[in-house]
Length: 188
Image: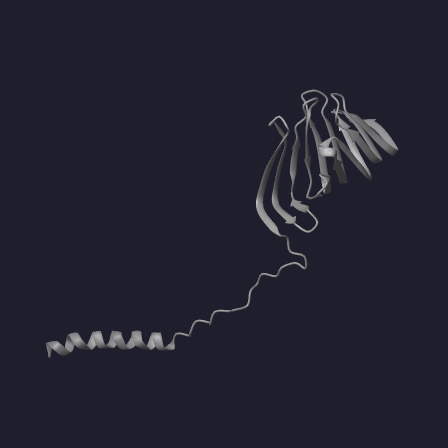
């Protein structure tokens, strides 16, 4: 009788466990379809959290670039950078940073920045800051231009206009607004 008292709870537990396993719905079979859809023109190289340093002929850093993504297209030699921040290191003047939502680097060395473009002079005195929606940088950062509306500030001085050119090759860069120029001072 003692044997029956021990075997009965064990048998009941095993039967309940077998019923649970038998009634449990089967796992869905693995899907062989992919959720990844490539664009019509996929890049040949894709990098997340991109960082690059360019050096001049003397081996000194001349440009730092960081971005959230980098896509390179071998056929054209062009690259797409998302959320780029570029620091231009100048021998003969102040350094500059350029930030935007997107940039296209062309095989000839030119770069086009798009969407919420901000250019800042990194000097201790009378810093310039430029805000626009589109900007092209040529000749390794020596020349900057845009046909778009711009806002240019230096301290309390604010200048707005349409179209902008800058020659950054000198200690005192030449900044030129093209048209519809208005200048005012903002109080602190």
